[in-house]
Image (cartoon, rainbow, N blue to C red):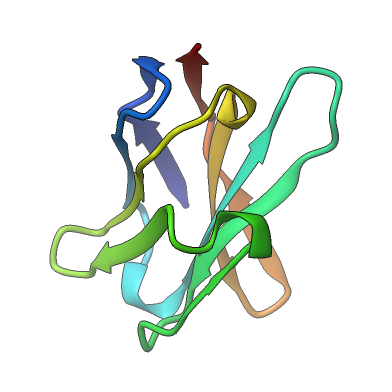
Length: 114
């Protein structure tokens, strides 16, 4: 499974960004997809997940600002982030989960300026 995350960059506080993660080399629809993030000096944390059936789950602190979605026809999972805060600055990673196996993408940097 190869995962390519994109869409990160520099954004002002209060702005929005949509991250994409394109999968290849697998049956995309068979995987739950997860977004994680890791801020400097902090542990990696779960941001949001979406099951094969489209059910979603979010970190409590991010509910209402972040939205995860998937397009199985495009083998892509998205993370729409709005009302961004400087504390959202992190490297964002996507992961594909199937059974007991997790495959990681390379991460995309999101920097939110105040």
